[in-house]
Length: 154
View 1 (cartoon, rainbow, N blue to C red):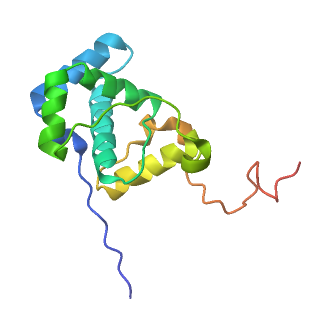
View 2: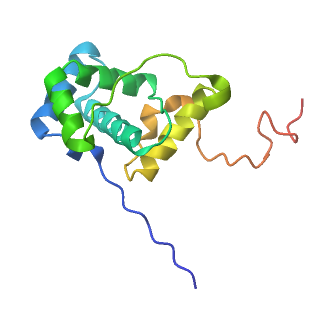
View 3: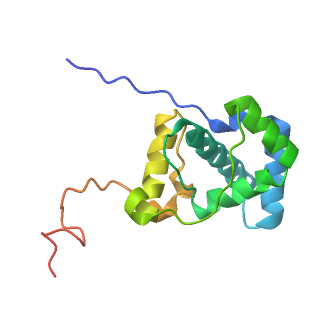
């Protein structure tokens, strides 16, 4: 009998102090009043998991638009952000907006899928609500009559 060992994941919210996390939650709720405190707190965690994955990965990664908003909120606290990067990664993680070469890095959806995979490989939890454009659900490319499947009626 084979057993599968469940890999433990880390909640990235533990990477910063409770005080800084609460500050970021408050900042995001002020900018986006429709965000609940609970969702804003989870968003901070996804942003931190993304940053940890950026340090872990050997390729460029891309945040979702919502995760990027959380990153911007942290960047505005320049001293705290710089200290966080230095303490956690030993270097500053720069925000470099722009478009990556599609041939080299794949399109946006492929890059975001790589990002989510990298977050998981780095050992952090994924909250798919913050990565909605992936629409990964339970699809396994099995050609089970999906719209791009050869079995789907045209």
